[in-house]
Length: 412
Image (cartoon, rainbow, N blue to C red; front, side):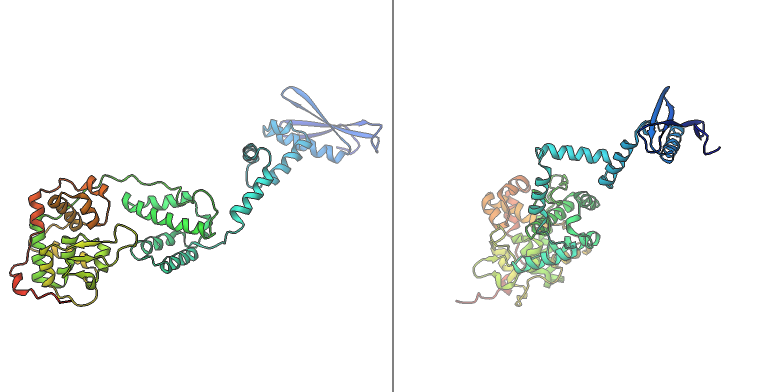
């Protein structure tokens, strides 16, 4: 087609768009170029100053119409330029989503979006130090140890597992969704809740230490608490406790004191393994719990019944810790391996101690003080599990011929 021949035809598929040249007195060249196409039965016209612009527009219209993009074809050049600019400003956010967020923010801030955003940035993020979860955890544990907190039984069990997954990530970028996914991998609800509770402690410390925004909630707090089944109490019977004591005395005497303090005093596993002989005061008839946490019910004196004193008197009371490493775990292992085996459920000694003491004394408040937990917990879970006679029998289990081995209490 000759360059001088008008109108020009631009064809794409079955779509034909024409470009006309018409006289135009105000144009510098004296000519204007009109793009003409049909859309939904209506003739559309667009005017341009140069033939190049008109032909480019004609080809774009033809391609859009051929592809069925009627809405885009009906847009003017100015509209398309405006949309392109909006997309560049929005970046990775879809234009519609950006406008919806802007409208919501404008409503909340009553039109003052920029000042509100600047204030939020100054108060929430200006002071934040960007640390990885690994770096934050090292500071956290150091701070807790400096404050005298024993982190070995809890935090040092949770944080390594957490850091395996999130250690290299900035702590400020770890989302509640990611934390929830990690917690959901845990089988038992109580285990999941225990780890969640420790994470909440860690994240709250990070917020207080300017490693996280000072928001109302941390991402850890936004995770769900798992529903736990009602606590089922597994206890050791009087007969089995007697068998366990005699098994330890006969075959594993180094674990006898551990068994005595577990059954006659109800010490927790952590308390048992930290208990020192210096705090087992036979002459005064009580145990001062060595590992008790200050200002909690765990800080307590636990009475020693006469039977417990007799058993402890036949133990080798060398200075230092009462329990050998993994003491109570080894006691349960010996019970499983005994012929015949002796039932010894997890936490069975502590549960049995509380149940039999409540049955023996009928005093829930006094038992809660000795056990280092709440009266509410005892009232809910330990009442009427055993009879008063069984309670009396539990605290009357004495060693055979123990009197032959008793030594005098030190004077003074």
